Image (cartoon, rainbow, N blue to C red):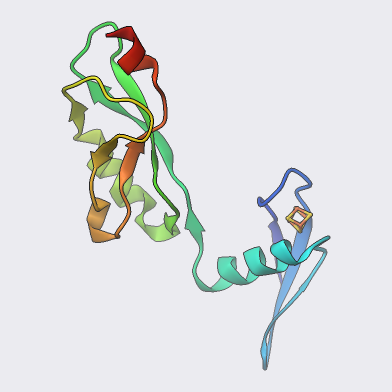
Amino acid sequence: MKELICIVCPNGCRLYIEQTADGFKVSGNLCNRGEAFAVNEMTNPRRTVTSTVRTVFAAFPVLPVRTSSDIPKEKIRDLMSLLAGVTVQKALGIGDTVVKDALGLGIDVIVSSNELKEML
Ligand code: SF4
């Protein structure tokens, strides 16, 4: 039996997952989304990643970014290494692409703040 905290909503239900002959048995969830979360955590855990990248602008040296959708949890470290080498050269705003098809995963890394664009 594995124990997890559901992160789908602020309730944070404590989930218990048991492998059965047919798949997984989940308990502790107040709704079906918790069951889906638990099964995904056991089979293909994914996360939306938020981070920052450097910019060339002294007045705004780091820019908040996020992945356009969830990526496999085991790829987070590789993505962070990739982002450590990125420097934004122009005024970008919310939704603008910083890295296209990051790590070949079919997702982009996009800007999650308008502050840089509004400042320049
Ligand atoms: S099981 Fe449902 S109610 Fe509980 S934390 Fe997850 S999403 Fe929220």
